[in-house]
Length: 340
Image (cartoon, rainbow, N blue to C red; front, side, top):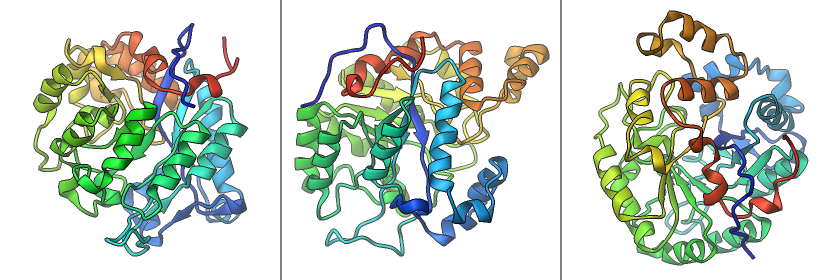
């Protein structure tokens, strides 16, 4: 059974943080060698002090603990820890050559059992042969959402073949968190056109709750179509459509944040997300905040808390932090008394 009762009092929830792994201690995670060579991944490894020795020993569990520690040290009560599925061919078989990372649902749920600060957001590619079985395991396990990155996982949200997947999501009320609209930077895009926001019309009309990651913001140095006007039109049409504000206060999308934070159509449908471990910084906003305020925000060493503070300083109301308490299902299965 899926529990849809909202939390009272509401909790402050970050709906967009990332697990990763290489398979240490039988986690079931996997990372393709070419992913580790990507510039963005090398930068993240450097920022987080990840060594080759660490990757050979306890990296997967330590990464989850690091995330939980940062949530615990912030004003955020809980963060959704996102899994990651691979690419599957036309017969529903795993395509290792195109896949970049696997963080399986079993590991997502295990991590959340270990760390009460974390909530399970597993990833299931609907094109895999056993997609409905894996989805059912996530339903029974108490997933609070399902994560898709269509351009990287080669998921076509408009494919009629996955209508049964949508039917089950609509029945249970488990949302899809989907990266659509803007380009992907951390991972390689396997099929870039699949990021098109228009492809999400099918799940929306099927009654699925959809959360559009990054508010569909176009990437500055890519040739992305600006689909935010379409997103805003759909917000008026589809009451189950939401956005998150993750991944905006960084190099790829930073100019959008002040505008989004004060947009009367976007703000009431926005859920808070940090996109951790992707960096978030205030120095982009020295013009809006002034040098003293910018430096004060930069002195916050906890990136989870810094992200909250930057978005608050630029205009997002605190209601954005707690809104997921009314949107995500199954919270009562996971939420304890982690923080007052």
